[in-house]
Length: 166
Image 1 (tube, one colour):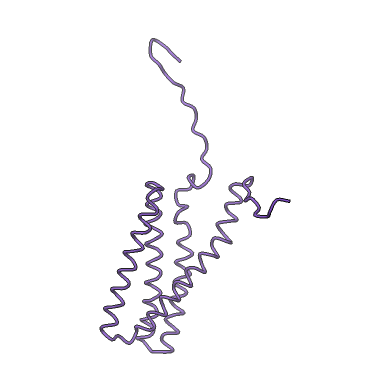
Image 2: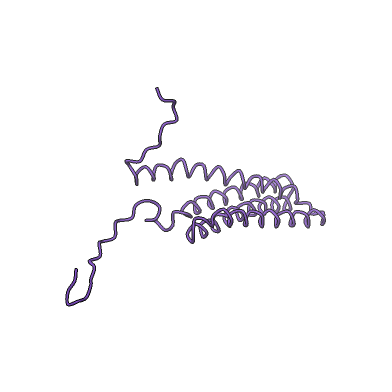
């Protein structure tokens, strides 16, 4: 539209956002329930560690779960940040944080093993319990919360069948 020699464009209203972009927290929405599940696993691991090896076992097992939980949480936050900045950064950031975490964990375990700490085995079992607890909670969250919510947000969207054509 032209008025008085000036060009003005009528701006079209922005379309309503649908999908993940409409929810800025979708990348980290799973963290609170997974952190709660990890806290439960930490309490159980500490109790088992205490029963089997006393206070050192409790500390080692709880520390192991904390290490696994921190590892997954850092990965989630770094990948979410990278995805928010530019989705092409997800792979390099994800690989970078993975290499850094594994290197840090290996160094930590080497230092602890050299010191002969009695809580090393409970620590290792705690890491395993933390990984299993986190993975189980994430599978539950995806199956029970994320997928049903996605179906509510996009009711017409279907997943193609993998059956062979008839």
